[in-house]
Length: 161
Image (cartoon, rainbow, N blue to C red; front, top):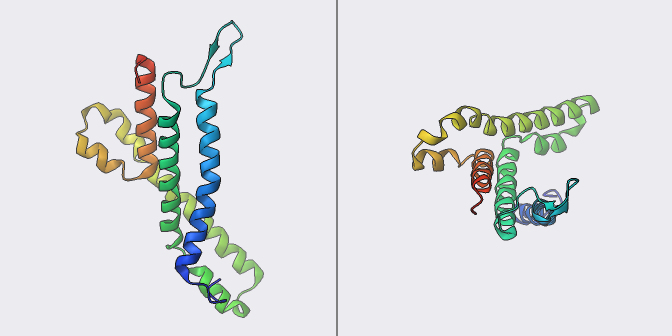
């Protein structure tokens, strides 16, 4: 798009808007599925998260969606081969372009996983961590999601939320 003269900030804004609209709809549906009570086989009704307010669950999921989009924007800046590929496309074969795109996708998946990996080491020590350590480790958005889900689960189990 920059070849056609589109400013980069407009391109980034369009991607953010498109992504946030799709994730907004998904967050509404997920929050509704968590909260809506369904009939149970043994009688009565139940939901996945019965005590939490739907707006709290939606805000939790929506904030994770915004953080995920921001993280994807950050990760996308690490792979700059797309610009150089289009400028020098006659020097690359189709197989080489395919391999570069696959390595960028694999690298993105690896970075995403590495952002969640510390939670396996942090979770057993959660009770002994200071508030600052918890907030600092929550800067990795996947760990923040895991901490939030853990807290919602703890309060749901106690019946107060």
